[in-house]
Image (cartoon, rainbow, N blue to C red; front, side, top):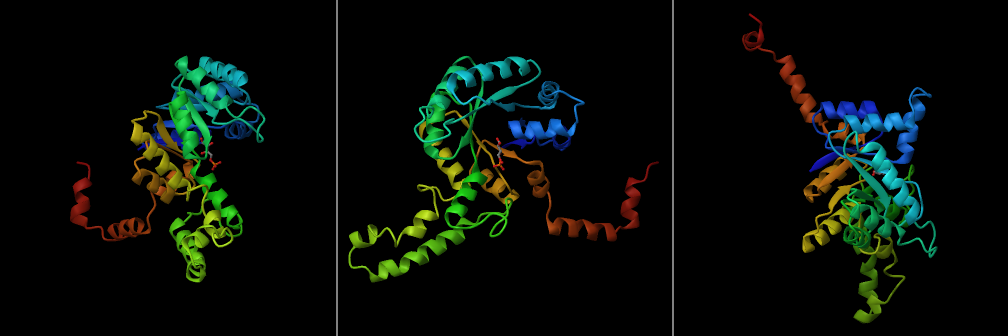
Length: 301
Ligand code: E4P
């Protein structure tokens, strides 16, 4: 699995590169703005992005702002022209730039992907929340698709009435096995008290929790990644999947178990991945056990 760092903080990028684990960088406009603001006018946004592209060992994803095809194509070309001379760049295009139902812009993301990718510009399709979107994005020519695992978990938890900050934290692992047990128990009564399969199947009220516990058959962000990988494997699709919106080390491990091509990880998630209580305890024990004859091996002559 390739690892991208999901940050615009140059110090974090440099530190993670020094650990030897970075294959690329993903940014978004909010992350870049926050990082540049911290420099209090000492560097322009253009210089700052240039610096990130120069130090990254692999592609840096830069996002467009425009909400329709022509604007996204114009901005995508501009970003690519400006920064690809300093390193590898991929342009982030939202899969569906529409901000409301039926405003006619639903397919502008696909059109922009098609136009830019046919010019040889690598596209990272962002804000992917369903396997269906990922299939269409790949067909349109995406180099990468970024399913937002953490945000799908947030959505499912909120559908079930769980509140962020109260019932779960942004970085807490979402254990869908527990949810499935609850969902199964909740339909026990319905099954026991109904006369026919049709009566059970059509009882909307009885299935309410079951429906709330998933998003159209997707049970979690990790499940979303699994379904996209399965579809791509079915058809030998070359588009690479970037598991994005990863909030904790266990989620990173689970997308690796699925064989995802890339995970883009916030700096704190990478930090969390290296820690284990027993490793620290083991080191403490070795350190307190130092055998003089063994440590003499390292003495300089
Ligand atoms: C990366 O491409 C995304 O911008 C990022 O992973 C979103 O993460 P969040 O849902 O934690 O904001």
